[in-house]
Length: 264
Picture 1 (tube, helix red, strand yellow):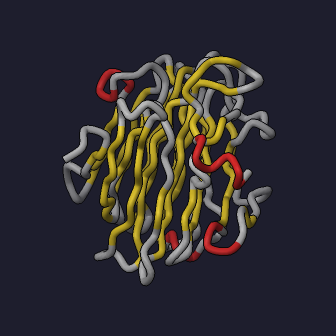
Picture 2 (cartoon, rainbow, N blue to C red):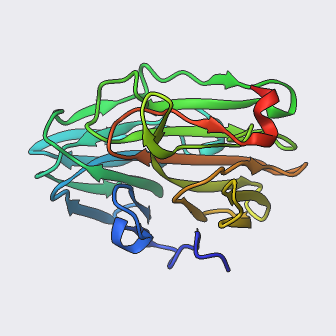
């Protein structure tokens, strides 16, 4: 199995914990909690900022010295409704108590204390189409660079219809040469509908020094340290993924793979 493909290490409680040290990079971290009603989760942010994403279900959240009430609305991610999220700065902590079965993603990156704790969405998050034909997919932007809500984190959700491609045409963001391109590490948390299905993600560099093709299953995470990283959803299987990106600057600039430059 590719070292870029991470399987859940459990079915209840914390099931993913990817740190920069574990991934072999410097910025992005990702965790996931699968809770049943009454279960609790929490952590201290330390020198990291965190965006909690209520992928599914409802939970009462306390963070940064405040009670944020019950967050979450969609019971199934493929409802495609905007998510409820919470930004928690570095040097704080957070706690969640599940009111229903729920899935909470923990997106984190270096924090600099530049932004206060705040709710993100569902207001202000609108499902929008990107691409055309079999390259069409639908985006819920949670915290991209046009939203001044974080020091480092860039977070978005993508819904790819069955038979379509996304994160395509192939592109990379693995050099620190702004404004031409920015260095951004990235994780993909994948969900498949129906849940016994699969999709494909390829991670590859122009020189072929990295070239991995992975069959991703429901609940898998793929780490993208460098290179191009397109995804394909076979006929009959709908694909969702939650992207987390971070690097030395909070800008998303990329360059296409040579073989697809004519598609831009």
